[in-house]
Amino acid sequence: MSTTEALLASGGGDGAASRRVSIDDALARHAGEFGRWQLRHFVLVSAAWALEALHTMVIIFADREPAMSCPAGDGRCGDRCAGAAAGWEWVQGSASSTVAEWGLVCGERYKVGLVQAIFFAGCMVGAGVFGHLSDSFLGRKGALQLACILNAVFGLLTALAPNYWAYAILRLLTGFSTGSVGLCSFVLANEPIGPSHRGVAGMSTFYFFSGGIAVLAGIAALFQSSWRVLYVVTSLPSLAYVIAVLPFVSESPRWYLVRRRADDALRVLRDIAATNGRRIPDGVSLKLDDEGDDEVDSEKEVEESSTPSSSSGSILDVFRSKTTRVRLVLSVLINLLCSVVYYGLSLNVVNLKTNLYVSVVVNSLAEMPAYLLTALLLDRFGRKPLGIGTMLLSGVFCTVGSFLPGVGAMRLVRMACGVVGIFGMAATYNLLFIYSAELFPTVVRNAALGCTSQAAQMGAILAPMVVVLGERVPFAVFGVSGIVGGLLVFYLPETMNKPLYDTMAGLEEGEKTLLK
Image 1 (tube, rainbow, N blue to C red):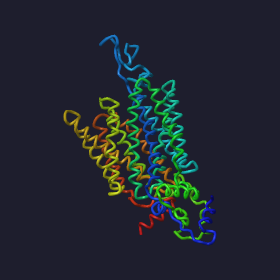
Image 2 (cartoon, rainbow, N blue to C red):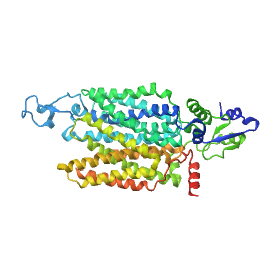
Image 3 (tube, rainbow, N blue to C red):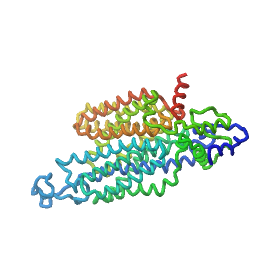
Image 4 (cartoon, one colour):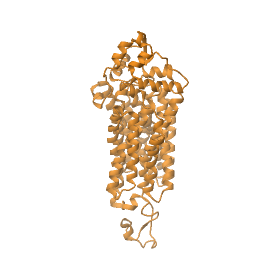
């Protein structure tokens, strides 16, 4: 049914006025802000974060350096760097990791870090491309579906890589599709949720990522003898997700509305209301936030709904507006600094001389209290104060850690500073997703988040380079990054309980109203 037919069916044909509301108002007044429909939809969509964790963190296990042994006896083997030529053997076999199969040790060790950087470079490019596609004709669901399919294909092909450089290229392609999975999933999961519940729901998405890392450690422990089998096992879930989960996921009603498909948007909202045990009155229709008032006549509504107003936008539209331009520049810088600290501290923890599988599980579980704390405090203190506080907490403790010597009891104190640092930055990393999404209108939201995600991936690329600078210098860099990032958050506006704007004009009008 077209928009015009829907209006006529609701009484518009005999001159009756149609009550027009925004999606936020429709959720709050009629459909329900967070009911059974939103809970089911949120869980199904957010499960894609676990897939991103599998494709991102698999490199920890696939590229690990297994133990070596000297069958001839102690002291009878030559240089370890010569490997089998000097009599050394890999304890778990040469197929256990890429390092063992291709001899990525000693002078070739840099190639392991290079692959990691290449993967995140792919993530950076893919986040921008899929962010734009998600805002345009492909939609949130379509972009997520395409990304998951590509993840499965590239992951399975990686298992067949004949040499290191083919492996590196396939990791680049996997990064291209992986970098957008969390972005598309986050926006799709949160756009149908009402304003009063959006913050807590958005802060809960990272549980799926951390849970995915914990599951990955268990899978990797079962397939220690073959890195190729590990890639197959971690790639198949993406294909299963596309086939078994995505068919039961709805496209975002906000995307429908900005694409001038108001009838589809209203259909989704009616489905939300029915599942939540509520009902949207027949006389209600939807409007963008830069359109008219609640009461307008039907003829004017039909005329406006057929106007090709900004149904989709690009990053250029973000830069044309001073309001969104400033927000984007600040968000990019904050996300980059946050990512440098988060991934940098994560790498430091992984490099501890403990059981690799247990360490990864412990690290993933250690981040969860940060997510719980921010979820509980988000709607009490707001996005801005919480962002400032968590970044400064991390920055201050990392700075303290940079002054402590790495000997005796002070080593333990410095490790504790690092734990507090990653606790604070994990909370910030999670917070920035919901905060950034609320800073930009629907028409350019994914394009803007694509840019911030690209900045985060750049930080991930830089993090390993910081880690190799020694013992104290990385802590100093992380400390400065956290403090500077916290100060930059001061210049962002608070978005708690503010409308989730649909258009650029709606955002500008809303800002003018607040200034009055």
